[in-house]
Image 1 (cartoon, rainbow, N blue to C red):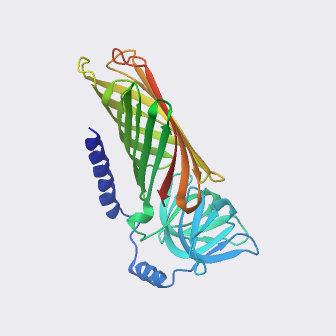
Image 2: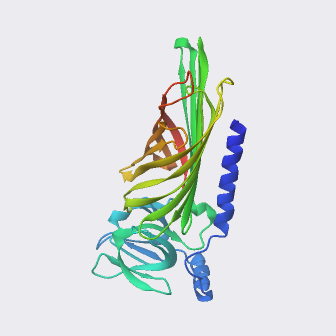
Image 3: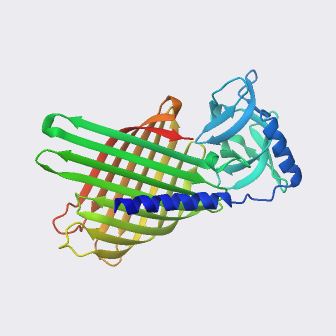
Length: 363
C-alpha cells in the first residue's frame, strides 16, 4: 500500500512537471522581447530596487513570493532576501509573470511612478497603474521549471530508554505555481514501536490542483490518502472537486473558503469489517500567514457530511507552524486531527498527531 501511495505521488508530480513545460503566458512574447531577454541573460544585473532615498540596490530579481523579494547581485555570492513592504520603488525592463491581490495574473514589465506608491505595468497590450502593495508574486518569464518549484523534506526522531520507545516522523512537500494554476503534493508518516504495545503507524498524503479564476474565485480538485491504525483504516481515499473564494489574498496572508462534492472509499485492516463507499458534501476554509519575522503559519479545517450514510460527518483539521533557519533549513511543528462520528466497529472516533521536526526547503 505504501509503495502505491509513493508511486501515485511521484506520478502526480511528474504530470505537474510535464504540464509546466507546456504552460503558456497571458500573451505571446514578440521576437524583439525574446531578443531583449537573451540580452539580459548576458547582462543580468539590470533591475533596480529603491529601499529609501539613500539605499538603492542593483541586481537581478529572481522572484518575489510570500512577501520576500530575492535579488542576486554582482558583489555577493548569496542572494539578498528583502521584505516586500520595505521596497519603496522598482525599475526593470524584464518581463515578469505578476500576480495581484485581486486574483489577476499578467505578463508585463514593472516600473515605479516617481513620487507615488504606484507602479506602471506594461504588458505590450495594456498599460495600467497598480499600487505596489497589491503585487503578491513576481517571477521572470523564461525561468526554468525549478524556479517555479517549491519543495521541502523534514524528519523527526524520538528515542527513550523507558519501554524502549522508538518513533520516526517524516514529511515531504512539493508545489508548483504556473500562470493560471498551481498544484501540490504532500506526504507524511509516523511509525512508533514500544515494548509490550503493538506497533503503530499513520500515513497520509494529499495531491491538489487549483485553477485561478477572476475576482478571487478558484476551482479546486484533490485526492487525499489516510492509513491509520487507531481508526483501523488500511486505506481511506477521498476524491474532491469544488470551488472557493479568497476573502483576503495579498502579499502577507490569505484566507479563503471552499465547498464541493467528494467520493470516499474506505478499506479496513480488520477483514471482518466490510469496506465502505460514500458520497459527501464538504465545506471548510484555510488561513495562511506567510511571514511573522521568520515564522509562518498554515491551517485548514474541512467538514464532510455524508449524503449516502445519513447522520455521518467527518472533520479534518491541520495546523502547521514553520520557523525558518539559515541556509534554507527550518523547524516545523504540525498538529493533525481527524474525527468520524460513525467509525468502524471497535475503532476510535478520533485520532490526532503532534510532531516537531527539522527539515530543509528547496526554493
